[in-house]
Image 1 (cartoon, rainbow, N blue to C red):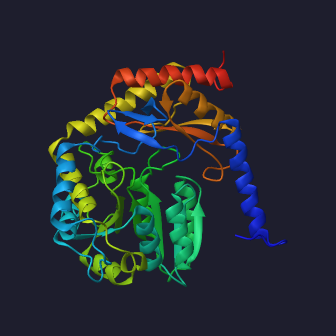
Image 2 (cartoon, one colour):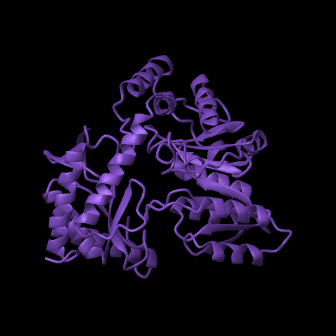
Length: 404
């Protein structure tokens, strides 16, 4: 690409490239490291086996024999892809079986599967809300939600994180006769905290707003049996949430996203969500792996309990070493560092200690709140977690996060 003088696009490209070059030269650039092997709670990078604390495989299903066998059987039966969009020639028997499984899991009429979680939010929000509508979301919602809100061309309003008074203020200020859509994360991916769902439901009904909940980090994680945010709060009301969204790439060991809801909702989205209509269908092997993952969650509830036990062990261990852990209750465990450089240094130091964990920097989080984000799975042992806790303490003292 030949640079044209004075074009600010090139200036922005050069600025980002320079930051990346500097990070690589200093040895602290942490992203897109190549994994040679992922197994038993470890990842091998550059010949070094590291304890994996950056995986969303919450229920440790990546190498589950039933999930692997389902994918292999589908590969044998259908081949490597569909060569078509779902709306045209890309729907197979396995796609519809997965959608029925999701609908049963979420206790809804129907479900539909998208190629990724990102395009699920993008296509769904932009199909539901439009000009003259108001779409309302938490300030710390995932980027895919924010992008879907912007793409919808509706009036886009954000309220303070998990602040129900601010949410009600925003709802009260919306025109009475406009369409209103509230979109919230069930578990916030950068903070690890849980939405105040009962109050959001109450307010959505009071102000006649449709409620959409993104359960990317809640499905398979929250609730006694991993059924998600409604089970977590003991809510047994099919009409409480209008649009249930989730991903197939975290606790569910595959790829994609889904929407579950009423038959009217799913029929509408299948004919209006552009990211569904104009995207190639997921390969059958991935679809089969997702279906098998849901089946394993139902058949092996002990995985959800082990995840909860591991999460409590790790959080309590950090608290005993002096880390602030107030309000932490999910497998997403952020350690706030502050500035970007110290977060990068801490991630590199943890890698040197044998722990693979990555920093989250601005603008993914607000400036001054860069962090190390650990994620716990049911596949970790207490010994592995104790090793990680000790490494965190040692490195935190070295970079000045903890005294000593």
